[in-house]
Amino acid sequence: MAVVDRRKQIIEAAEKSFALFGYKATTMDQVAKIANVAKGTIYTFFTNKEELFDEILRHVISDMKRISEQEVSEKRSFFENLYQSMDVLLEFRTEHELLIKLFQEVRDFGTPQAREGLEKIEAAILGYLENQLERAAQRGEIRGLDPKVTSFVLMRLYVALTSDWNKNNEPLSEERIKEFIRMFLSGGLSPL
Image (cartoon, rainbow, N blue to C red; front, side):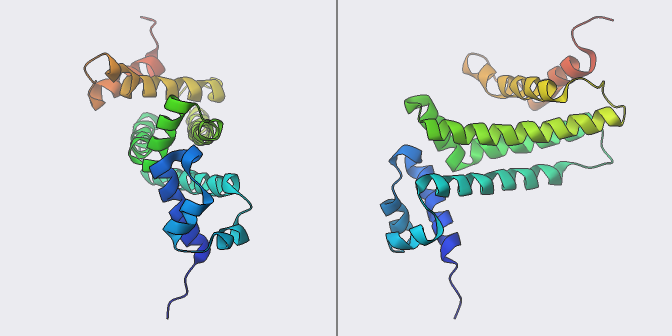
């Protein structure tokens, strides 16, 4: 007979509930029902909904790191690794049901916990980009600009071209997006 991992069962049920109902509308009763456990069982592992939500975010961030690290190869240039990593991270972000629901909740209701959750995920992405920029600068592939600022600008540029642009314009192809990023990062706007 298989041993049931109740903690894992609760986390999976909570992720499903947060993805379906958002942070604000998820209750411990719903999580217990989805997990098919007594509500008290949840409290043996997690003090409250916030702690359970934080655990789920840690799992999401861990998955994002694992997925992006699988894309990085020492044999490729910084820019090739950057495009690969950003593609999979942004695809993950847009296809992951929990993240989609959190974006909707922040947009529609401004729920502080949902906003904080998205900020944690963005901070993880920025930290990852910052590390990649530092390594590329050490190898002489790029100039040694402030990696914190550069990672922020890079992420905003990528999100603007892959998402924000599409709201009022024909979507850009993947190649066109990469071309703009390469132009802005490698040569800037200066004709020199």
